[in-house]
Length: 493
Image (cartoon, rainbow, N blue to C red; front, top):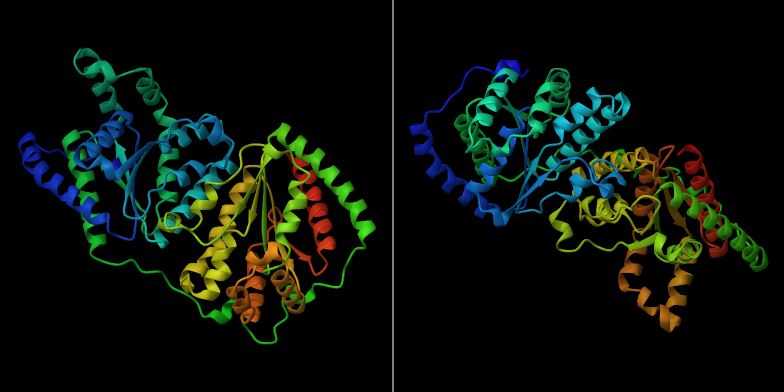
């Protein structure tokens, strides 16, 4: 794959000087037009020639307005990054709509790690799959993704390094890392080619650029970026194909997951108090062990309005050290959050090693309220099932304990709770006209919840449907479930 690019492309100094002024004007104008566009631009610079990649990144920053582009070099992960899933740092670095980002590095480092045995084949394959999935998500969401692999034959790299070291004016940037990378190139290049093949997908292919001649490299990359950006600014992205809604479970009289739930289960007050003390004590001890061993926890709560999520969450946090957890109340996305892929805000909130993050409402809004209220197009919420499964798989692979809860109540119980809130001064803020309006779409939500649970349940990221007509019973069931799951996660860590 890489050898076929070694054809000897060159650009003369005169042609280079002639082309650069108009090219720079074009890039700047496109950048300014991008500010008003509804998509971000991601430019990934990688390659087997570290010096060429550094020079290319510097050249792009020289030719564009750096106020509207961010550059992120993916070197060895920091301690903070190592405590999260591998793609955490990629998600955190994404540009907002109307802006661009240059990503540099990462690819050859991953290839070197596999060649050196620092990671095994299953982990490497998972990483490739998640990279491909992330690209698909971003492209489907409208991002313009441009990826360049800069290739210089090893022999020519060696000659360039030797010449540079002899030049006192330009050899200062050469160090042992360049020679070390060159020495290990033979076993690494086949793995790099595999990465290129397996992470080239529709809308995000790799462009291999022959980089022996610096001028040819600079013009080729910059022209490709300008052409792609100009073309994209002239058209609107498609949202992709969508399926008939009947595929997603709106068949009349169809039995659902929720229809099997026994809502009559309850606990008397004395039994509840005994079990609450017992289960909270267990959770406290398990959480300390999880903190010590670096096992992170993500708890996701969904359910009907007035289903009792807040009360359940308070019983969970009541068993945790104050500094060990964070509760994230999820509302409609902010103006800033709407400039990113919908999963971006949740990636940013993942807990560090040994800590707990509790989401009160979650990323499942995409396939619930956004689906039913029309905030997401059919193609968007339909592909969200796979996107969410990939997101949660990365948490599990990193060693997180992940549990998801749907708190289920009857329509009658919900109405009674609404009315009770209206009569309680300190709870009146919880009830709105929208809560009553949502009751009219109860059957639509039942169908959506059914498909959500069926399509996003896995062995290590299970949905737990909790009967919640009796609040005491629901709180104990959640605590028991968390204790059982966290105990298993610690055993397998």
